Length: 196
Ligand code: SF4
Ligand code: SF4
Image 1: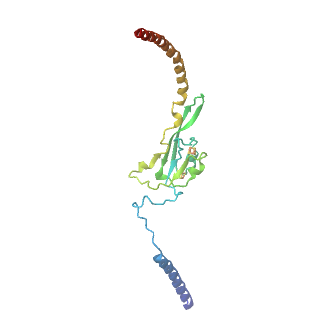
Image 2: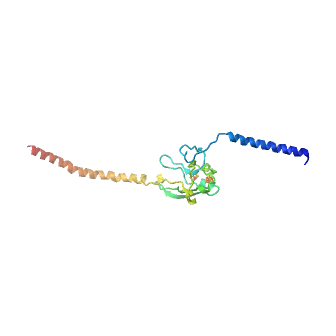
């Protein structure tokens, strides 16, 4: 190394050192922001798009839009999602595939959101609820369809035949009512006799 090269190298080193110290000095006087967590839990601002955990979107009637198509399961690169489906009989005699269990393992999720993007019915989304710490690894495996399926309730179909017997019971009420109606004049006759 010549004398000239030595001084050029020394100058570059000094220039780099000054640049670094400028950044350090700027951060030294910048106002500090310290989150007092968990004391500030009520006022803590978490960005809406922060991906904390996958969840179902339920409407006001407690229904979700998952049709069990498994598109999200196939899109997931590491097998985080497991879907069980079952066939159900519809009132019109046809069969329909429905979601049975939607299992999601938060512990292996990479939050890539490919599952959300591949869903044809927009049934799932990411929650920004960041407090997901648990003590056991198994607790990170969740069943997302935790509410009962409203369509599975037997009430709508049996309700129609149940009305027919109620109508059939009306004549019985009439027959029961007739003696009562006949009894009224007797009472009125008694009353008249009592008055006389
Ligand atoms: S975010 Fe990515 S890794 Fe997580 S469940 Fe969806 S597709 Fe799988
Ligand atoms: S969440 Fe969406 S993509 Fe996944 S099974 Fe349900 S409807 Fe299909």
